[in-house]
Length: 428
Image 1 (cartoon, one colour):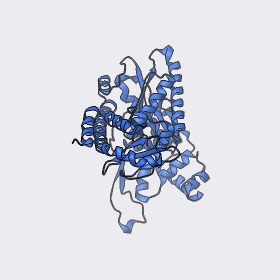
Image 2 (cartoon, rainbow, N blue to C red):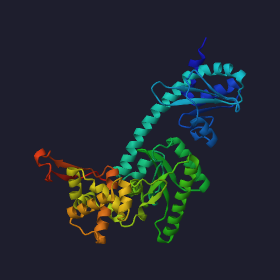
Image 3 (tube, rainbow, N blue to C red):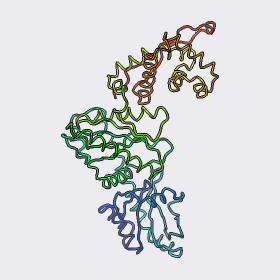
């Protein structure tokens, strides 16, 4: 006599998860759903995001073992699951219209499907890992290595873009402590947004912890650019508001300028900078376009070498003194500049006495040989601090020190024992 579990496994290998869903639906004679722990529906709909209510239900499921079940009496919904040892993923089976008296019989029908569901879950996990490797390679080629055949590379992943059209890259960060949205859920929700608002092209992706969208609609003809740019801003604002309301999260967004497809890497670089530009100050829930960054556009547009030279020339003496004397002058300078030299506010922010701030301010002026009343001096210092902070947050600028341990007998004297090193950094 054939083993039902092995028969179903064989059908699943040939037909996929539909074989499991059809088997259970017919055997149970009830509406069923197979849902991944990432909130993606696999049966009866394929790779679709859940409704808001059902998504909330899945997220709030209690922890229970594979041989156990969860039942909600008010909804008459029975939930069972299949998971993999040592993996933080599982598949849930939701069975509707189930009374308490039905639970034992439903679970017996479910039993032969466990092997096939385990196989499907493991296959999905392995496929996801292979796809992630391919995605990493793709984005490295497109956004980092600047492969000139961008259209061909993206086309291999089902992303059809026009060489005659300009595109912009948008990066979205949910911030720390927020519930992570799976790539599948992200794509499904933004695809729905695209249909509702009739957006021509949005390709939602996920890479290196950030959500990425490639936006179109920026025309090269001068007569249309202003209108197209306005539409793009309005789209991004609606997008942010829609997702923020759905997930109750303050999404932070950075947007690069629009470029021909062969120069898409430039927009990605600008979107990274725009996002970091506000995040390093602790801001959340913003939309920062690179083209709205004023003079900082020109600073970041420079090659890495001149930027490093600018930061080093402006700040190196301060960094060296901080390293040798643990003086926190750079931290004080940053707070002073951000508070427009409000000593009281700076002192409160740093948890020090106002006189300590005044002393440090005098020490900074002495070390750098500057006049605080000169607006150009303040601007250059602020620019160097802001640019340096952004580049450090992106792991592009990695300053270090060459130094030696001072003799304890000379510790009462300040003797220069180190100098800063602003390495070549990474291209960005």
